[in-house]
Image (cartoon, rainbow over all chains, first blue to last red; front, side):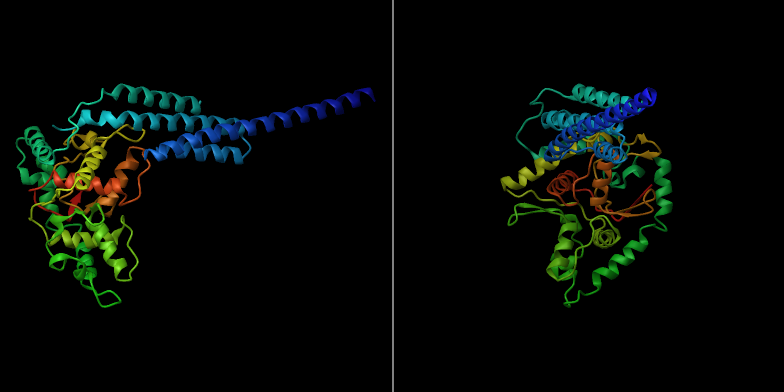
Length: 103
Length: 286
């Protein structure tokens, strides 16, 4: 009896912990995705989005829909890094383009 | 593993971007289109001293003797002929209201390609031939064509054909807005974009005549004179809009909408610096 009570309690605890972990991952994903989207939106306002950023965002969404939040978070962070690189590019090119000009 | 690789590539991209950034105020800020066009032409003439000036409009075929011979043979049965026939038929067919394209253009639309794009003082913007054609359609109750598909390519092919041999004659009126549009086009041409960190100039100024995979890159001088083009790679015709948007995608940049201001200004700049070179469109490219 004591053994079965222990097993049932353990199963419930593990289930609860797993559920809590999954909920945490989804929240992390939402935060990471929002940050990536915001960066990509800023790149859009600079008329300089990259196709690879859109692909990474789509991959993040797809992974999240499948419940794979680790992958979804990784793709979101990748998208954010790419979007920030495109912002850096647009900003630095405001002057840097002149170096290529035929004169 | 995959995210690690992507982070590494993003980091590399950032490092490359930082490396290519240069101090400001490299060039004079006051635009001088006449001086620009002269320098542009001189650059290519010096880079390719064996190429006759008017031959630059033949793009990659001007860069390589073997390719030039292939092109001459191809021109006997040109792959754009079907599009030319289609364009001629479309151009002469009246709209539902009885009017036609001829009613929208000077000289009934014949032999005027070399004057496009132009700066429209009323609108305060650049108007390209593709844009003018769709505006003509809409003004006559017809739906606009896609800027990147066959119908627009056919119409512009026919109009270019009626201008063959006429030199580009793009005007920049004495209007600060026109000068600004020209300058914006120039900036777009030289600005690096996309994950590959390429500008238009990376391929068409720095490396024309070189191969990018199997293709020989065309020089920027005269690059629009042959538009629209039949591209074997596309197995079909392509408009200027298609060329611009595809270039952006190929360097992993999200293309703008066809005929957005940036593309109109880019066409204005590129056409202006090719003033004096003959219209050769429609063309064919590998």
